[in-house]
View 1 (tube, one colour):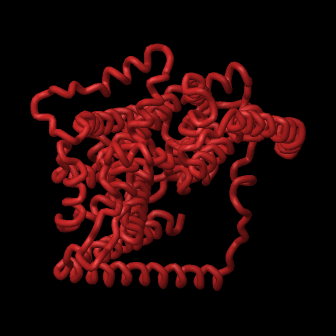
View 2: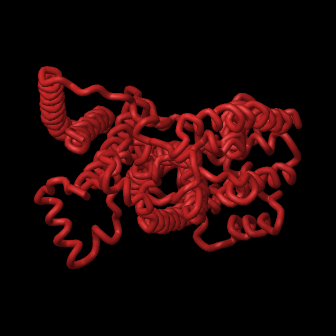
Length: 507
């Protein structure tokens, strides 16, 4: 295979690899077809987690578990850039969960959980559970009326868990009230939740490392979805790697460039959103103000518990059926998700990875996705109101409709039709890439000039925004910090755009 001309940076990486094995033995080269953003959603999840950890560590410097609400208000109203850090930390956590859902959904659709990636999928599901637990703990820490009411309500509901899980939860969340040093008037559980918040964060980091290690063990990204049974690892396609330009392995610099680009993209987007829509913060004539009231047991009794958006689908079950049955439904949901690779292989007996060849899996997954959305919206619209058994009955109808409509459509219409069109093997290049025509010399020259103009505009915008950012930092007061955040987020997005030209230009 003709090797692509290497840059001096590639040569430095190879020199290091020969001596210490950091690059060639831990990061697999990715084929050219994998350089699309949907293949790098995992990098975006990692970026949002990194941003949440950085800002969380800075926020924690001013957080006092014995007086959580007052320390939160102090951080927002008195600490320079404290409100911006608080807002970024919250939005970064939301971005991590949202991107994690997208990442898992995409991998489910393309069959990235199939043999030999079953354990990798299970580790990913555990990561999703840890991320939700981390968000649950973090949501409670400001100790405002809404968050702590929802937190204590959730704990009460989880006491109905079967298999002695309720006893374990009670053991971990029951704090003796006579412990020395516990501040009166504040639930001592806040201090324990603050510690758990860091422990769970450490577990997330550990499982991310395991997840990435398995990912590299399997040679990086999955092959394109296939309509016929075949190997599921890139390394098994020697002929394509040697002869198909779309499978050509790319240099490490392109991989690192794309990772850096996704980090800047996520950092910039989150910081920009956190600056434009400060989380539970308003600007008044006297400065910045935290808009959420402090937790009060009397007011809490009159306040409907509303969990954050990522827990609404769980809350839905407890609003529909008795708590003990809701707990069983919740655990069954987790178990099916966790063991889905084996369900797909041994129960559905699907032989190939392409969605049209996995009708039962796609029907079940579609039911999961639709019910997740319906349950979340329904629970949000009915705070503190019991839905009744009609809730789970609607869920049952959603799953039934998914199978009645999708299963025969995929199995008896799309699958035979697609196999007839592609009798030998699934041609990714033909079916997944838009047809292109050969550009003449004038068109090529025009495209090149347009790219140069856009690249120059991005570089100029980055330089101008950076200058404005530096000037703003010199004169910024507490109430101007979101303007600084806006410029910083915009700067990072522009920098991501510049890197995209470097990564994708001419490829």
